[in-house]
Length: 423
Image 1 (cartoon, rainbow, N blue to C red):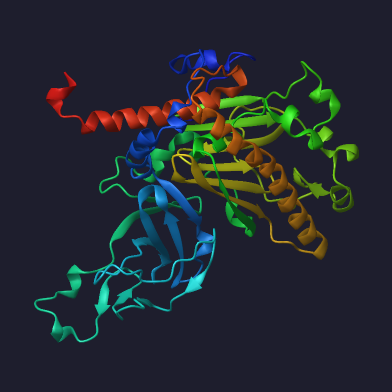
Image 2: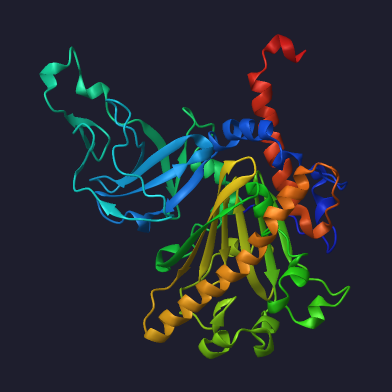
């Protein structure tokens, strides 16, 4: 039976989730080195983390590397001979050297044939991680190659998105972790949208502070004036969303409307008018088939955009004919690496290719308007002058993310406390 999601009346989103409260919230979770230390253990070493899509390792033997600083990990993701994507720590079992050279770009594709060879010592590993052979094996006493394969990490795939989990015994399967709201996208044709543009930035802010910028649109009229017409910037007009929804640690926000005001020429760069593409993507996109009902769980009409925020650090923004992915990777309590990817239907003409490139560039500029503010936000929060911040009804996802992070850390801390000490 389909899950029945609540549809609160306008202006009552927060009230419908009373566990979140309605009072001011603290951002202390974003300025504390001690909290971040626990956050790494409680969240980034326990939750399912999206690292890539299946298109990034298309053939057996193709692989990529990924750095997950918050989990103290350097990984190899590889497609094995049976078509399964596997994840291993990029650590040779002999002396701990990287098995393959690390690439710090967001995406890169390399091919290894049918095995990995450590560049330092020549130990050779199969695509399934088994240690196949070593130079001069008679120099080792009682060495059983079967005991020294690459250290594996739990790896699973949903809708073409590749996830890993560093927990020795994950508490949930990937599908259980994602829950019905996210898996309502099972039938979205992600596999048809394979033309990708990506970029990476490093930001002097906590990862949650950056995520907050894409969880509410209250700030849009004030910050993004280039793209917002005066009737929306006027006091009292605002920018409201049509639907908010929570499911476990995950969140979604959907906007309604045809976005006609975004397509008005006077609020565009000249290149957008010339190419008929920009902030909302190409004005016309190929028919990619029927879209799943889970894409618009609130049933708002006319539907515009849905932003699925998958805890802890993945966002999938779907515009119907194309989609956008953001990932946030903490590098310290007040810095993170920010990755962005736009996915389109493969261009059929030169004009379509130009439309895609223009959209990717304009979207990057729009996102960096937010990014440019957040180093200052982080610095101001760290002065620790104020610890109570009011959030409005359209900021329910901000409230939810910070509560979820605190709840996961609190649960972890409780587990680490001896039973007698809890009394």
